[in-house]
Structures are given as C-alpha cells and as structure tokens.
Image (cartoon, rainbow, N blue to C red; front, side, top):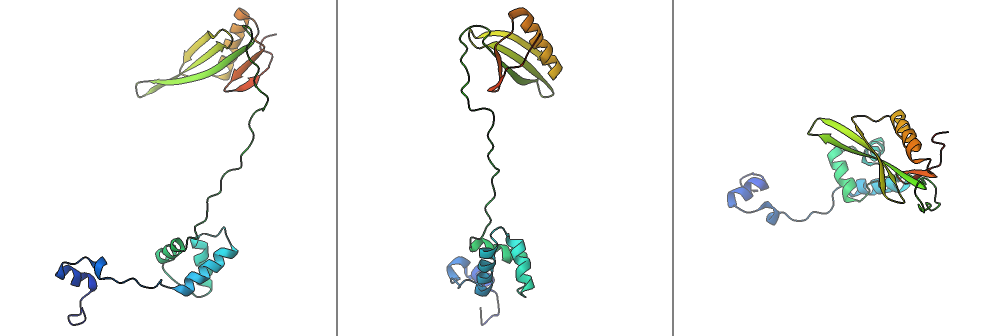
Length: 177
C-alpha cells in the first residue's frame, strides 16, 4: 500500500484477502466528544442525540449527524420511551351472578364482511342465566337508537332485566318505563 499508493480496500481486493482480517482494532475515536456527550446526557436525561449535537456545536465540537448518532449509540445513551399512565377502568366490585332468568343480559357486537368490500355488524343479546339467545340483529350499520329500539322490544317480550352487561361494563339503567 505504501509503495504503490493504493487504498487498503484495493490492496485487499488484489491479494484476495478479506479486509477485516487486515484491519487492526483502533482505540475509540473522539474520546473528548464521548466524554462531553456523557456529561450532557448525565445532566439532561431526556435529551436525544440531536439535542446533544446542538449543545456540542455550541461548544465548538462540529461533526456529521451520522457520526454523532454512531457515538451516541456506542455510548448507550439512548433515551427510553415513556409509557402512558395506567388508568383504572370501570368498577372493581365483582359482577353479580345470574341466578334466575332476566337477572342479567349480555350485549355484544360482532363484525364480519361480505367478501372484500361490504362489512356488516351483528347485535347479540343473551340471557346469562339460561344462555338463551334473545336477539340477533344484523345490518351494515347499527346506531345507538337502533340498539335502544331492539332492547325496548326485548323488554316488551321478556320483561325488564335486573342489569345489562356490555364488554364487562355493568349497566343498571331504566330500559322501558
């Protein structure tokens, strides 16, 4: 390489040697930049590599963003993603068992499609005690008013339930009169 003034890659290609076997391990490059990055990241834990790069530029340490990102990753300074706050949903009281018919109805929506284009939904209402299917209503769109009409019709036929469960949410509303 010295005698013929060619690059290491070209010399390895001519001799048919893998360049990885010829290259020696180098000490880590830019130790002063690495130290400065660690110091900034220690003070400002939520700063990513771009923000650290801006602070390094202000101190006169200019570099390519790709090199900055490589050094940032090699030092293990990546910011951990925040998780959303866990919120309690619903009540923690145990759901009452259905001891007799009309004690509890379960209401659920099912969805499917006709081939690849038309979708349809099914409203299913089930008596939890005797596992009787009280209603199956299928349509391309089921509005809240339609659900209320179907429940009113079921109340007229079977009587008013003590409670209605929808996706494990307990409802004790007045259905009809």
